[in-house]
Image (cartoon, rainbow, N blue to C red; front, side):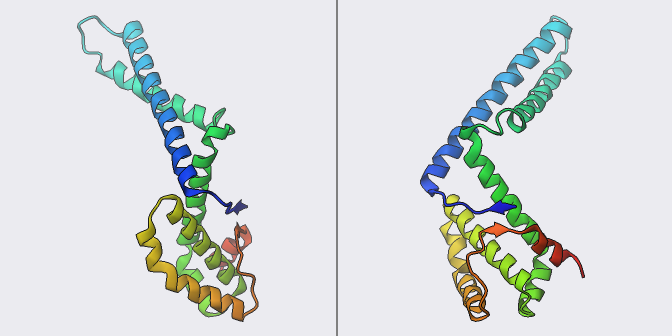
Amino acid sequence: MFEIKPCDPQTYRQQTRRSTLIVAVLFVALAMLLSSLAVMLFGEPGGDNFRFNVGGVMAGVLLTVALVRGPFWSQPWLAPAIYGWQLKRSLMKVTNVMHTVTEQVHANNPAALKLLRFYHLGLTQMHELDANSSAQAQLVREIEAHKTKMQALGIETEQTRLDPAWLAAMKTP
């Protein structure tokens, strides 16, 4: 169950830039090292070693992904980037059922109302973290109208957790 956590946008952007730089430098170093090693071990002097260079780069990609998804995944320096990725994945899960959510919100389905509120809160945070205030400004009226509707129905508006049961309820007819 994903939960929206408070984040300082400036700190988030600084930390994600740093972790992106670390991963990029790691990839470049691995790709160059593995390409050179492949050419040295299997290549021909003065011959066409393109396939060995490409193989080294592909091995660098695979090794970088394995390191990020493996030992680096639990490192504090990567946590902000992972949080941003999980936030966007959670929002995409809601987007995938948005047509049903919209229909169910009009029918005052509590699960749909909560799901849409989570979506609005998550989208607001994503826009803040990405410094995308123009996209956020377009949604303010819709977000406030939905919040008012939830308050009128007596439903808690602080929906910071994405309950998988809400998504399942939107997928079943």
